[in-house]
Length: 137
Image 1 (tube, one colour):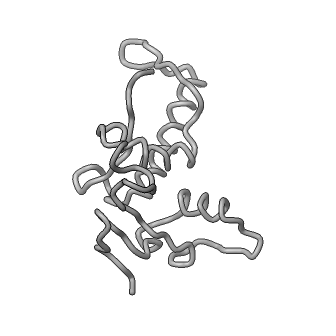
Image 2: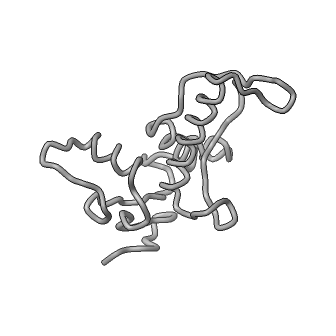
């Protein structure tokens, strides 16, 4: 409690610079820690970290957006799309990669699929400070 946490990515931060991968890895890492706790595995000094609610795709998306902005102290300028904030945005295309799509998919189920299965191939466009910096067009 009291620690602002965000999720980010950069070239030296792991095996992928894709933030969708970072979100997925965070969810998987949380599941590994939870499994270790259930198995009675503790830290080096025998300590157990307090656990709250498990990390799912919704929490990972929050960490990658508003959580990151808050951790950097920039929540008043970035992190959500609203009037008065910088327009930093990524447009994702669920049909741009290898995600199975069905007529019954809802907006929420498409977002969940993108968070769980999306790759850089699903990134259709990127805006930074209101300027389009990437587009598949």
